[in-house]
Length: 428
Ligand code: SDX
Figure 1: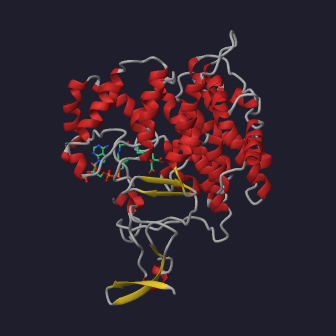
Figure 2: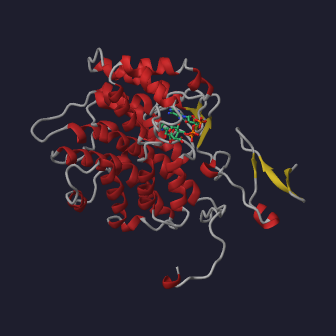
Figure 3: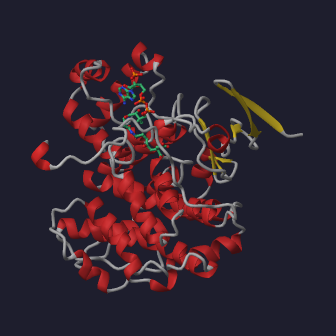
């Protein structure tokens, strides 16, 4: 039985179909609103707008629930590895042992990048922000892999998907090595995905690098936490770029550019800088006051979320992983962690944050963890982009394979000058 919603607009009443998903809010299908009423809907920031139908990730912001293809993030982070989550996001089911082994094998054998790409990196200043390097070099992949840019060819889409997931760690490590002035380290096929990445970042040619399995497992879990998150800003960017038929490398580069912003993936870098600026527990009240002051642009970075009005389930796992990593590294009293824990305690009891439902998000504890592992602050969002690449490409794949897919082209509420005639400069 089809369900409709009535829109009463002035003297007009129009009926719009109401669609229900498997779980979560229903939607009013307003595709015909303009043709029937001459009106648009208006929703800057898309606070009440579903941009697409998807089967990949579900978030219940009020309950603090995150599901990937129906599996809770807590269970995926606890039981599987990042490449298993990649397989699940891409294909919709957890892999069998044979499927997982094949997927790992295929990803591993795409981790090298075209040797000319190394020369591409050398065009940057050494102090270029690694995110600037990533936006440029990932976009440049389409100049090196012409045989996987035709999005109408399913085979090319598969190869491009494997390549982008496999090559992000190699390029991220190269961005780091270039920044610190050390030689690039090639991937090794006998290492797992995250161990390979750690070795490419921290090994030097002068001696063998032994991957710490605890740290590798922790970082692999951090990648799982960052893998996908429904229609966030950078994923929406990738979908919109892909809706024009742009090649997948260009679309992922657009996603990286959007993720860089401090309101989004750049918040992990901004949160650590904020904790460093606060410096000590004694300074927290001053910064809480700044965050609450309407006339002060300061915000608590790593706090708040458009969707979560409860604790971000990823932040809980992130906090646990943070303590695990600091413990493994023998870091007993990290002043930044002391500030973070006390800041969280105060904020969660302050009525401003309680009333506005502002909780720590995934970016609050990630910076402390990554810094302890040896990554510079400028690499934090690069790691977020590395992990989110699978979410971006899985959402891109879902969109491209949707037969009803069309180019995204929002409209506007125009408040500029009505039509007027040109005035010659001498008469102005
Ligand atoms: C990510 O979308 C995703 O899923 C993103 C992400 C993913 O995995 O892809 O989860 C990753 O981007 C996490 C968010 C990282 N960003 C930050 O930590 C930056 C700090 N947080 C904020 O800037 C803010 O909370 C946002 C951007 C995350 C969400 O902003 P919204 O949904 O637009 O909410 P808002 O700005 O309208 O804030 C609502 C109110 C406002 O007060 P009023 O105007 O109602 O009086 O809450 C206040 C805000 O001033 N507020 C904060 C605050 N966040 C919101 N006040 C102080 N500190 C904060 N951090």
